[in-house]
Length: 512
Image (cartoon, rainbow, N blue to C red; front, side, top):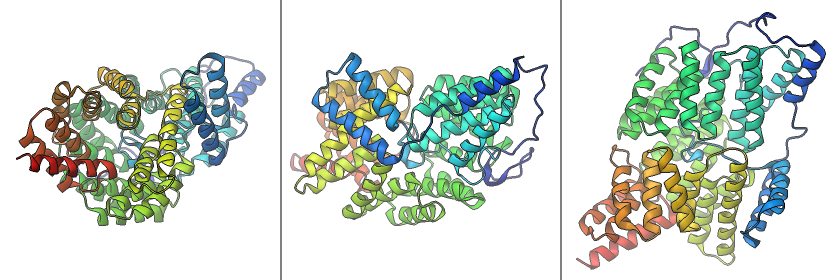
C-alpha cells in the first residue's frame, strides 16, 4: 500500500474531489409546481429550529437518567414524554465508531467530501447546504451532500434526530435523480452510523456500480465488511480502495484491517504515511488520534500522548483525541489529569465509552462521593441507550459491554447474543464471552473468548477477559499466559480491569 497518485482527480486532505456542478435536468426530475417544491425543500432543510447547547443536551440526558433510576418500569405515555423532552432538548446518541467510538476508529472518518466540507466545519457546511437547497430545491447533489453532512454531524454531536433528517435529505436526492451514487453512498454511511452493516454494504455496492471511484462508498464498503466480521474480504476491499482512491480515509481503514490481523507494524507505517499526506486540520486530528490509539493499545503511552497533542494542536475541540489523551493519562498513572479530561469530554458528549471510563476512574479513586459519581455515569449509559435506540441506532454491543460490568448481567447477555446473531466480529465474540462469564456460564464463554483472539488482533482487554474465563474453567496455565500477556502489552488498559488481572495472577501463583 502506498499513497500514490490516483487515476481520478483528487481533493485535498484525502477527501473526495469535487465534481463539476451538474445543472438539474427538468426531464429527469419529478415535475412539480415550483413554489410548493421550494416550500417542501425549505421545510426539509430546516426542520430543526434550533440546535441545543451541549449543556442542555447533557442536562436533558441526566434528567432522563434520573427518571430511569427512579423507575425502570416506565412505560407508555410517561416514557414517551421523557424521551420527547430529552430528544427535543438535545438527545445524545452514537458518535463514533461502532468500535470504541472515541478511539477515532478507522471506520469513522471526519472527511465528508470537498464538496461538503473544506475545513472540517460541519455546522457551517450544513447551514450553507440548507440555504442552497432552499434556493435550488432540484439540486440532487446538494441534497445528497446535506444528508451525508447530517450523518457526520450526528457522529460528533450525538444528536440522533439528525439521522432522520439525513434520511429525508437522501431520499429527496434519490427522488430527484434515482440511483445517483452520491445519495447511495450517503445511505451507506447512514446505515453504518446506525450499525445496520448489512444494509450499509448493500448501499455501498449499489453506489459503486454507478461510480467505482466513489471514495465514500469505497470506505463504507470496507467499514461494513469489517463490522460484519468478513476480514479477508475487507482486506481485499481496502486494496481496491487504495488503488482507486488513495488518501487519508482509505489509508486509515487499510491500517485498521492490518491491525485486526495482528500486523501492528504495518498498521503503524500506513498511519504515519497517512499523517504525512494529511493536508487539513481535520485530517491531521483524525490520523494523529488513530496513531495515538494504536500506540496506547501497545502500552506506549508517551508516544500516544505525543500523537494526541498533535491532534489537539490541529483541532483543540476534537473529542476522540481528548478521550484518548485521558485514557493514556490514566494508564500512565496520571489519574487526576485523566478524570479532569474525561469530565470535559462527557460534559460535551456523554457516550458509553467515556462514561464507563470515567465511572471506573471514580471507583478506582474511591474518594468521598466517588461511588455515587460512578453510579451516575453508568445510569447515563442506560439513558443514552434508550435515546440512541429511539434514533434508530443498534446499540446492543455498547449495552453488552457496559451492562456486563456495571449493570444487569441478564440484559448484557441478551444484548450480546442479539449482536452475535447479526455480526460475528472479534468485538462481538469478546462481548458475548464476557457476558456469558459474568452470567456464571464460563464454560460456554471460553470458545467465544478464544475466537475473539483468533485473528491475531491483540487487545489487552480481550486477553484479560480470556484469562479470567480460563481461570474460571480451570485452565490455570492458559490463564496465567493470557493475563500476563494483557499486562505486558498494556499494563494500564483499564483501571479496574488491570487491577483484577493482577489479583487473578496473584491467586494463580499462590495456587501453584
